[in-house]
Amino acid sequence: MKISRLTLAVAAVLCAGASVSAFAIDLYVDTKTKQIYAEPGIGRQLMGQFEQVQPGGGNGYSKHDAYGGDSASVEELKKEIELEKNQVKALEEHVTFNEDVHKKEQEKWYNKINVRGYTQLRYNQPISGDRVAGDDPELRSPGDGGIKNNGSFSFRRVRLVISGDINDYVSLYLQPDFATTVSSTIDNQNFAQLRDAYADLAFDKKHEYRIRAGQSKVPFGWENLQSSQNRLTLDRADALNSAVPSERDLGLMAYWSPEHVQKLWKDLTKKGLKTSGDYGILGVGVYNGQGINRNETNDDLYIVAHSTYPIELGFLGYPFTGQVLEVGADYINGQFDVPTGDMTVFDTGAKLKGDDIAKTKPEGGVREERYAVHAVLFPQPFGLQAEWNWGKGATLNPDGKGSLERRSLSGGYVQAMYKIDNVFREDGVLIPYVKWQTYSGAWKAANNSPYSRVDEIEAGVEYQVMKALEVTMAYSTMDRTNVANLGQASGDMLRMQVQWNY
Image (cartoon, rainbow, N blue to C red):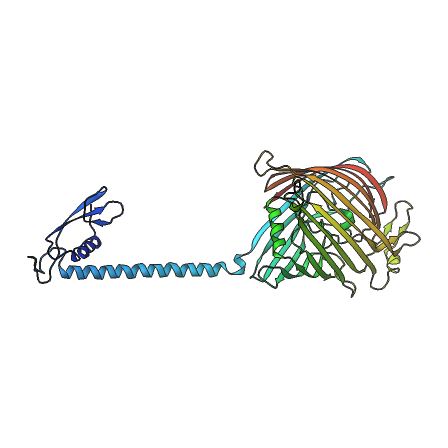
């Protein structure tokens, strides 16, 4: 075994503390811990016999002997020990400096940015009903452009989300969609379009109070606010979505989200339940009102008010233990400047001119006012979801040359679902569902804001194979107004969607 000079120095110090009358002492070293002992023991190896060195050679040794107790050698060892201590200290300071630099680098906002997204590949197959425009109107849906003759495969959504905290008070959110269709003589697909671009400006580190500035979702309805990545059904209900087609607009929103409610929503999400996201238990805002990525065409701003609150039903006892019911109400009001265009009415063959219709618009547009209520019982395992809205808005009257008038609207949906966990895998989830929806009112996203009538029943099942992959199969029986020509069409559709999350 090799004995280092540092070990000898320690031994010398130990010897120096021994009694003056001691002539020599055997020292042992533990082969594992390297500690010095004066007695033999298990795992201890004899180092040798050592004597205390007296000043002036009082024990028979002179300062010129080569023994390790030579005072010059001890001084040299002390200097070496001090040098090693300084080297260790310098190394510790270097490590601390690098940690501080790394920590400051991590605090920079661009190192806090998250990138995620999802893609939806959809296949629509008409089973029966009106497929080709002719003697009968073609079955179409404004919520899914793939519902048409020869629809087949299409990308429903290709989303990429860039989000993060710039600091404790400012957050950013940016979301483009790469599956937008541009209408022309040929429908061109898969163009990029801006969906969200906003900043959250918080007044506290808990983000209980915040203002959202930019293009974001308008807080009207519950399903409208729910991300399509999380929504169970393939499309949103027409009745609520007709209020804010594409769900977004440009403006300012203010939200209040108490910390305990934020926690409850997060806990529901961790359980794999589909919430609508954090849009506050109270929200108010102003926005342009002309729709996503459209220029403002009047001086009037829409106003919106949103309320929702999740209630834990455990106080009711079994079978409500762990159940959560969310209820709320919403309101919007504003003047909508209806975009106009030429139209041929299916039933009468009348050819309406967009210029003639535009002459009937009141200055600034037609006032729209809506009220909505919602209730959601999260599926644990059985769940229910329902919404309804009513009010008045701008609608085309196709009589004569065509005119715009203010007309009543109403509609909503009821949805039931059942959640089955641990299907084939620990993270496998199966959710069968059935949804009934109805609506009578304007579809303002289309030219001339045509009056639409919808009655539809959809039954389907979503299988979450894993967190990264979902498959949905749905069968729908539809009775819908084709908003391009006001023809009423019906039919059955078989639809499938594959979604991968990243």
